[in-house]
Length: 504
Picture 1: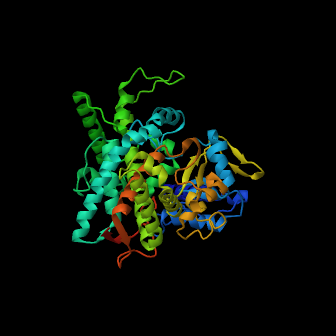
Picture 2: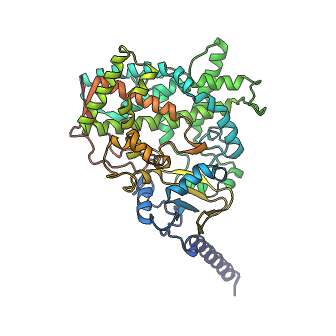
Picture 3: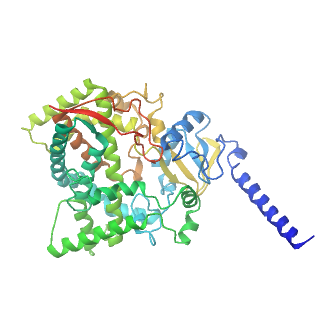
């Protein structure tokens, strides 16, 4: 046999072995007798993502197909075997009761090489606990009161801009205006800059905010590698954030720090609270832990405020107006409540007003159920976890756990007529009858969304001011029925939500 034949036989043997190992790997759930859809060798059960299937459709379809087969079904998160949680009681145990075994989200983070991944949402283990403790005091209701006037000021400008726009063209692309509102709020509160994208849609901060969600450093293969082999990728110093995004936001933060410190400027905003954490080296926790943060950590937290607060709130507000435009009786009921509360406070929009707008809060809660912006919650198992009462079902150490919150929200056993917009799903009586884990737009347990209060405040102010001043109706450009963007990991309309807007 020639050397060429030997090399070819060796190569074929290695290739055959690799294929065998890959097939064995993807039989992980089958050999354990746990239901699982046949995976794609590259994308696992995320086949079609960003092309033929939207992210939320994957979760809804998997849940409907396998619900009732056990407390969880098998799933492949790219190459990684994952537990797809079908039972809300198990989801509650993972998020709350047994949280210490499911602290991490399991997403890729590389703080040393990619500083913006040092954000609270991505951090793991001890690093997450330390940062959460440092940031928690900045998101109390008291701190929200400090930022309330700033959001209201942007809200008043928002109303003025919409009024001017409909004089020229009464049909508006609603998500664009909502995003400009939340961009200005986040720019002011998180980065301490006057953005004014409401008047200037092409503002650099607004353009870069869009690019955060569209400019990906890696394609499908790169994403599969990062999510399947995170430890190896960290050792190889692989970044996830595009350099131009890192350079822009790090530069913005450094410039703002220098300007505020040089001019001794204090503001009642999130950036000011972060700056205080950076500069107060004597600040200690009750157990003596250093509570200061570095410039890079400050930038990462301001950045996650943008990522989590701008897109989620603007999308929620857009979907709210979309549904209210189709249900004018509900829209009028919300408007009447807003006007009544404001008249009670002599026309002044105070922090206390929000608590009195009960029906508006029901509408927002229902929108977050129907259009759950983050449709799945990710966790990672730290130690082997046999499911209580189900010894056959074991979540292995290091395994990704997927909690399909959007699927729970569309479950007819939990919400009758789950595809229908009905704010009465959130009357105090009905909320009291449900387990809290059956409504998860902000997660639950110790790792719930730290900015929940701010997000809700921002949406309430924006919607209240809009409904007080304008009436929203469907038009020939309104996308009915709703279809979802296939390229966005968050729940987002595939087509622009256009509504007819008239001044009241």
